[in-house]
Image (cartoon, rainbow, N blue to C red; front, side, top):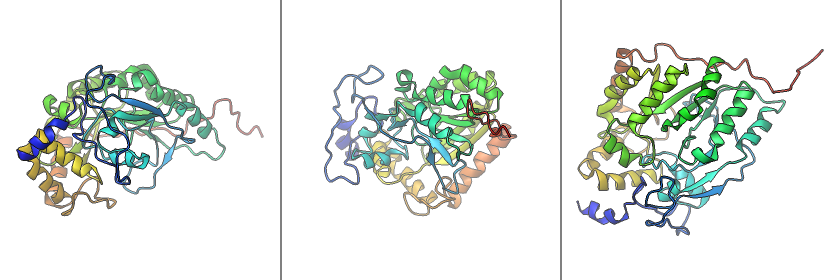
Length: 358
């Protein structure tokens, strides 16, 4: 309880991180989030969200990790206002001279030229079509997307080029683009995954303060499925000692909503995330702090985080095996992953390109 009292004054309404520690490359923090500012995207009190333009000159990111299912991805935003305290992408803000704490969820960098850049890259003579994963680092449908429409512009270009894409999001806002997604689904160009961490609304509000409620995400699954869009659910992350008891209930509810596929990822705590999560537990779930951190070490071979390919996303050891067995047994019971949607790369074409005439 002593730890909780030392942190409680730092808790900021609508934010997941309890504090705003300096980035690991900085000796001092040069920017601080005001805890009583106005202007948050939800209209409530809390650290005001500030937007900056990311001056990137390319939009498609290549990935060579052998344990990742995709090798191309796009992230319309840097930072994520959803504020999921466990987000493995938080340390990326340190490269910007900012904190992985409150900065990550209140200092958002947008890519307004994303659609234009994507069109240029897809039109290059040496481009080879492979599925693009949208939202692998930060959520493409976080609150700012409602006005910025950057994700929408990316999807419009991909649709025009007949380019396949997969989406992962914690936001029911994805249904805003239902007509576009349904049209792409008819051409086998899209699949969507809703990420669900817990069905407990009270816990979700603290873990993921500005993400859609669990009920809204499952409602989005139903709506997407009804429109003929291949839809799945990711249990991401499974938090040992906190949310792992919900594996079966999440998959059962998802299957009832119409989901066809499912996946999971074990909690990952790289760099600053380990301290942010421990701090969050000390404030919100103090009696589970020791158990959660102990189990995290157990599934990562005695370390808080194991970055080795092949085990970083699933963990290792008996507890990780138990989680894997429960997940696969539940997936079979609820008839998930019976068949997987294969996206079509053969339809890709550059608009206006007549190809070789002779």
